[in-house]
Amino acid sequence: MSRTKILVVDDDVSLRRVMQLQLEEAGYDVVTASGARVAMTLMAEHAPSLVITDLKMPEVSGMELLKMIRAGHPETTVVMVTAFGTVQTAVEAMKAGAYDYITKPVDYDELVMTVNRALDHQRLLEEVRVLRGALDEKYGFECIIGRSQNLMRVLEIASRVAQRDSTILIRGETGTGKELLARAIHQSSRRKNQPFITINSGAIPKDLMESELFGYTRGSFTGAVTPKKGKVEMAHGGTLFLDEIGEMPLELQVKLLRLIQNGEIEKVGATGTTNVDVRIIAATHRNLQVMAEDGSFREDLYYRLAVVPLELPALRERPDDIPELVQFLFLKARKKHDLPQLRLPAALLPYFCGYRWPGNVRELENIVERLVVLAVGEEIGFKDLPDFLQRQKADLDAVHVELPAHGISLESIEKELILKALQKFEWNQTQAAKYLYQQADADLPHGKVRSARECGRKQ
Image 1 (cartoon, rainbow, N blue to C red):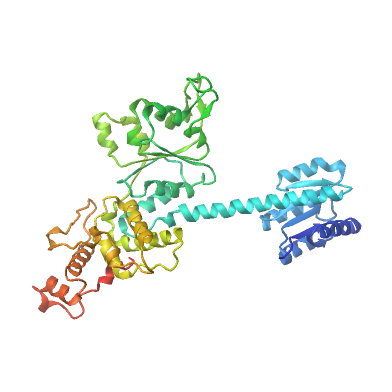
Image 2 (cartoon, helix red, strand yellow):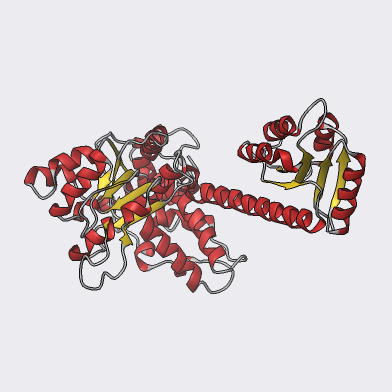
C-alpha cells in the first residue's frame, strides 16, 4: 500500500530537513522544495495530498504559493508555517483556502497532529464528493429511463428550469415518477448540496399537517415539551417537495401561499414569523385547475404553484420505452437480490409491451421484481409471467388505441397491431403476416413483415 505523499516547502534548509525526517518517521512519503517555483514543478510530478509551506519566503511568498495551488490543484490541502509575529497573516491565509497553520519553532507532536487532522479532513471531503457524485448518478435526469418524444419534451423543459428558482407543479398519474423528476430537478439546481425534503399531504392526518409542515414552539400544545422544526424549515436553502398537494386542507393552503409569496412561515404557537429560503416543487395526480374552479383548491395558490407546469406521461402513452425500462428494472432487481446469473430473454419483452400498466412504472417495477424473486433456475420463462401478461386476445377488437392530445403515432399503432398478431399466432411470423396483410398481400414488397424483436428495439 502506497504511503500518503506530502510536499514541504521552506527556504530554510535545516527546518525543511527536520520536518521531512519527522513526517517520514510518522509514516509519510515526503518531497521538499526550497521555493514556490520548484514546489509547483513537484506538484505536477508527484501530486501530493498535502502541502506544508512557510508563509514568508523570498521571491514568491507562501500566500502566493497558496493561491497558485488553489488555482491549479484545488483538491490539495495546504497547511501554513509561520513565526509567532505573523499569526494574523496565517489566519488570512486560512480565509484564502489554507486548512490550518502551525507556528515556529515547529513542535513534532503539533506537526503530526495537524497533518493527520488535515488529511482526515481531506478524506472526508473526498467521501462527500463521491457521495454527491453517486446522488447525481442516482437522481439526475440520466436516471429517468426512456427516449419517447413526450417524455423527452418534459425532461427538456425540466432541465431548463432546474437552474432557476421558479416554483414547479408536476402532474401525472400515480406511479409515473413525479418524485424522481423532482429529485432530478433538485440535483441539477444550484441547491443540489442543500436538503431535499419531502412531505406527502395525502399521508399525514389533517390535524398533524400544520405542525409537520411548519413546526411548533415549546408549550404550544400538550406534549410539546421542546420546540420542533417543520419540514419547511428543514428544507431551508434547499428544495421542498410537496407530494399530493391536492390533498392539502384549505385552511393550510393560505399559509403555504404566504410561504411562496413572502418566504416566511408561522410555527404553531409562535407569535411571530420565521424567514425561510426554499424552492418549492409540488406534485399531484389530480387536476388542480378543475379543483380551483369548484372551490376545493385555492385558485391563487394554484397559479402560484403552476409557474412551470410539467405533465408526466403515463406509461401506456410511451410504449416504446417499455423494453428499456423492463431491462433496467430487471438489472436493478437482480442486483438487489444478488442473483447475477439470472437472465430475462429478449423474447419475453413484447409481452410487457402489450399491457396498459394502469399503475405505470411503479406497477412495472413491482412485477419485474416479483419475477426475479420467484424465478426458478437461471432464466425467466413464459410460464413465469403473470397471467395478465400471458393472456392473449381472441381478436384485435380488444386492441387499445390511445388518442393523446398531442397527436397519434402511426408507428406505435402499427407496432401494437403486429404485437397482438404475433401473440395470437404464438410468435409465428408467417401466420401473423398473413393475418395482418391478407387483403394487401400482393402489394407488399418483399421483406415488409417485421420481426417481433422491433418491440424491444431502443428508439
